[in-house]
Amino acid sequence: MLDLIPSAEEMTILVGESLYDIWNKLNTFIQESYDMDRSWNTGGKAWKYEYKYRRGGKTLCALYAKEHCVGFMIILGKNERLKFEADRDQFSKEVQRIYDETQTYHDGKWLMFEPTDTTLFDDFIKLLKMKRKPNRK
Image (cartoon, rainbow, N blue to C red; front, side, top):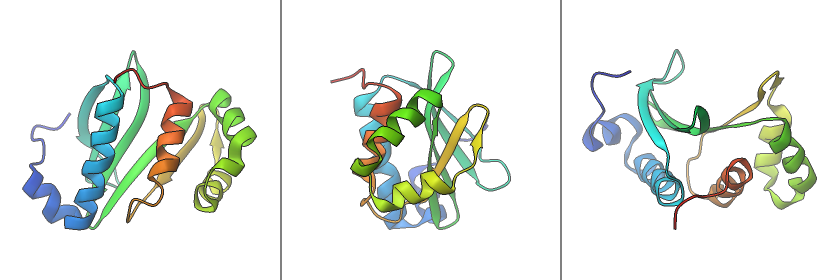
């Protein structure tokens, strides 16, 4: 657990203004749609920060931040992979490519996206809804 949660200013300096805007838009959507526990952590070797959404011991997704980069990770288990594969034509070519290139582990596919704009947001929302129905609104 982090001792210090980064301020908006620290995040803006770290990722840059346009990416911080994307970070905020993603967080706003998730927080408005899902009642989840949220936690800040260090981001391991590859990232400076991890901001994870969990409920009942299950992770919905996590956002990551490092210098000039934000990440959005969602893990698709067996059932979600079957749903994705049945509906893959509903997703952008970029999401299909990342899905296809991501290694499958015993607990699922850990899809990592590094958005630079909001073009994949509709796909992110579909992936989130595939994983868990929104429980707010």
